[in-house]
Figure 1 (cartoon, rainbow, N blue to C red):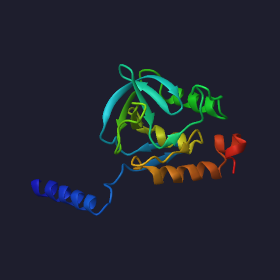
Figure 2 (cartoon, rainbow, N blue to C red):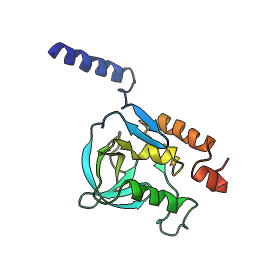
Figure 3 (spheres, helix red, strand yellow):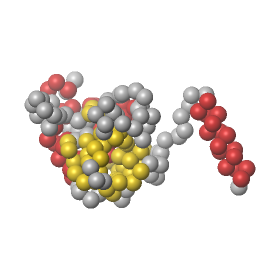
Length: 178
């Protein structure tokens, strides 16, 4: 057993040294819902409220910005409500109502310049990957901000599927339909 663990650890170190990443949890699709085969490592939290489509509040008042996605604005100061913003916010409120248990998984940087926690969010009850589901359903565009790009390629593929199917904002918002 000790030898197996040592071999796995050595393989992980060698992959990291070569610039490869350790395998991500397998993504499973059921319609527009994207789940993972198991929860990744991270921190468990409870949703307190949804701010908008890509920002939630957990625990005692920790703001969490979902990594890799950008939903249309609904609450940004001096910015009009954008096309499909209310739908994106409502979707997030439906899938993450107050009291929902989630797992927050992190990438290279854990906070942004606004002191929000940056995380991939997974609903604990059914392993729903919120960030990915927002993109696949057309509620969000992909957003690559280095160095937090662990799921960027997967999100790009999910966005392509949403665009090709004219799902969500891709079919409803003139500026994004092409």
